[in-house]
View 1: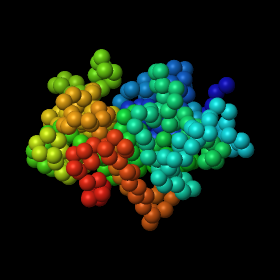
View 2: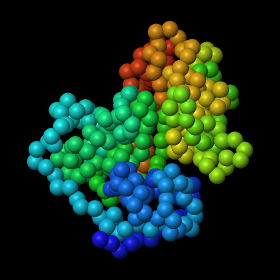
View 3: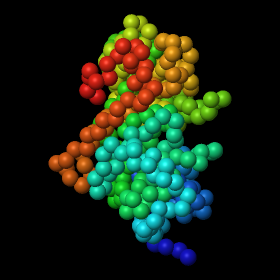
View 4: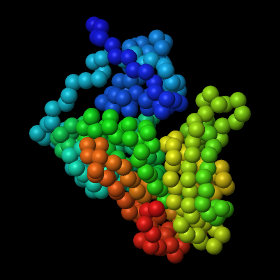
Amino acid sequence: MSFPVETIEIRPDEKGMRFDRWFRVHFPAVSQGYLQKLLRSGQVKVDSKRAQANDRVEVGQKVRVPSIVRDPPKMKPSLKPPPGLSKADRDFIENMILYEDDYVVVLNKPFGIAVQGGTGTTRHIDGLLAGMVDRFGDRPRLVHRLDRDTTGVLLVAKKREAAAKLGRVFQTRSAAKTYWALVKGVPKPPQGKVEAALVKASGPEGDRVRKAEPGEQERAMHATTRYSMIDRVGQKAAWVSLKPVTGRQHQLRAHMALIGHPIVGDNKYEGGMDLPAENMEPKLHLHARRLMLTHPYDANKKIDVTAPLPDHMRKTWKLLGLEENRFDAK
């Protein structure tokens, strides 16, 4: 059976986005698995050619999508909790909630749990949210991602339309994100900007990124991070505020390593050995501290949420004599 098609032209502000990310912005109700099925069957094409999920989109390209994808069948809220989701898992999600209204939920993601599924990953936040349709009235949708071992603020849309609106906010870099990290050594100057294009590079530690080399411009991802030192522990370590201008995978971790100050506990980017002090937990010390953006349904309302430090970072702050509450999430 064939359906009418919708054609969307790539805008200048979308240049260089991965195709699967671009698709999620425009069609937030479509899962990654369903998108892969559409791509394999040739139902979604770019300039009349088959596309791959990791392709980079270019200005002026035309994406052809079956119109039925825009309005998939809606799930009806159930009266009982879905089978397979335990009370403990439901409480796990409830205890993470920092902010909630009719359209948005902001979670405080803990250490060590994946945001989405992947090879060998069966328990993840996206899957747990899917099991709580009865609680939220619709299928909650992730708006952005955090690494498994990164903690802190995670934005979730309660409704498909809200996900689309919030996706555009992130796409246009209108959301202000602040991360706190403990890095090795003391950055000089104490405030600065890191601009280094990144490319994906597989290795024995799994997927990671590295600085793009000459000749790799076509697959390089432009990436910019602003950093500012908040406090330091002699010359051994520094507490820094990180503000990503772009949102690339592992961007903050790779950029800090590139300037010689890897994030403490980061085994992928040279931060896992020689911790600044004894008795420190060898976990990644990177925390999404604060998120600020305009509410998707009220231009006069701001969503401004701050997440407290996770236990392992709070213990480190105490061990090193750093005062968490002395500074705002600037």
